[in-house]
Image 1: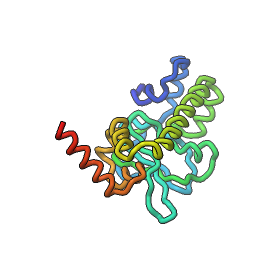
Image 2: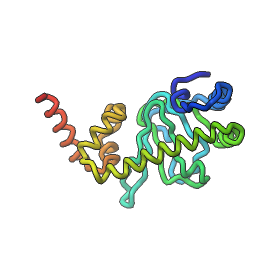
Image 3: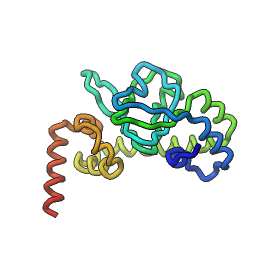
Length: 196
């Protein structure tokens, strides 16, 4: 089994081909339909997924019961709730499919076995985790240092699928703005691009 999504997610200079083959073979191909919950709040994550095709999002319910989007997952990304999976605690987040999704599932027990067996998988894990930590830190800083318009343009640039398929309300909550503000931002961008 060889998949572009697996190759992209496990791109790491030190993997030997036989190590990659073993890691790839440990993944199981699964499909989800639009609206399916991949992980539900209160349940402990027992796997992570490599998203081959589709769009998913994670969200929490705030103190008023409103859904707040915490992350969007697009093609060739890892769908994971790190805290729940590795700390073995119930998730505070829900992960749901915005579109139909084709994924490769990697269950926790198998991951643990290979993690101890293949030192390069541990190194890859450290490298992936530090990249993710950097991205989350950058996003939290940008919530305060960039305008809502700039944050929206960044999202458009980095994950165009989100703007194509995610409802306005979900995008607005991810950007930390109201639906009305986001509608205004979108109109301004459209009218600005027509003038140019």
